[in-house]
Image 1 (cartoon, rainbow, N blue to C red):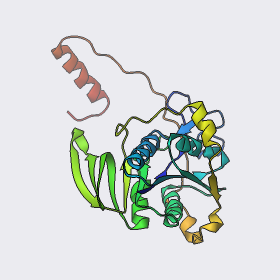
Image 2: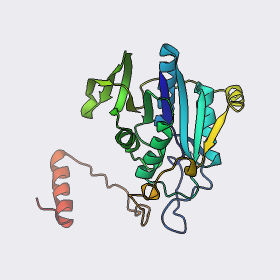
Image 3: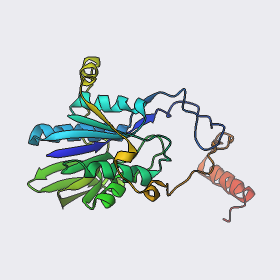
Image 4: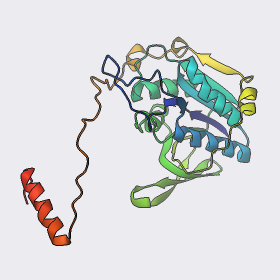
Length: 259
C-alpha cells in the first residue's frame, strides 16, 4: 500500500504567555519552541504500522520553509521512506491554499491512502483532510480511531459525540483524518534522527506544481488578532443550598439576566 501523510511543524503554545506581533495579525513566534503537530504524529505512526503489515511505502509531505524539514526528518526516523517539502515562500496559507497545494503534490505520487491529523495545535482548525479529499475526489473519514484494510476497502472506526463510535466501510483510494489515541507513536532516538538525515528529502517549488494563481489566493484572511480581555477571577459562593440559590439570583438580576 502506498501511503502519503501530510504533516506540519507547529509552535508549542500551551504553557507560554503569548504576545501579538506589531501587525496585529499573528502571535510572536520567534521565541517559541516547535515540534510536529500532535495529531500528525499519530498519523505518521499509523501509516508506518500499515506499511509494516501490508508492505508498500510511506511518503511524508509538508508545506513550509527550510526549518520545517525538522518534522520530515522525524517522520523518516519513524519509518517513512520518502519526504517532500513544498517551499511556501510568502504564500498566505489558509486552509484552502494548504489543501490545494498538498493535493497537487499528491496527484503526482502513486497513492492509495492519504492520512492527516484531525486538526492542528496552533490554529485548531480541522479542515485540511476534508478539503484534500474534495480536491482529490476520493472517499474520506474523519476523527478516525481505527483502520483495517480488506482488499480494496477500508473498515474504519470514527469517533462521534459523547464517546460513541461509528464503524464504516469505504473504498480505496481514500483520505483519513487521524485522531489521537489510535496508536502509541514510537520513540525517535537521536541516532534515528541522525540516520534519517542521510535519507533523501525532496524540495518542490510552487512553480513546479503548475497551480493557477487564483487557486493560491486565500479564502480566509485574518484582519486582526487580539488576546482575551483580562477579567477578575471566579467568585466562590458558600453556604447551604438556599443561601447559594438566593445569591445566584441576586447576581443574575444585577447582570440583567431574566429569571
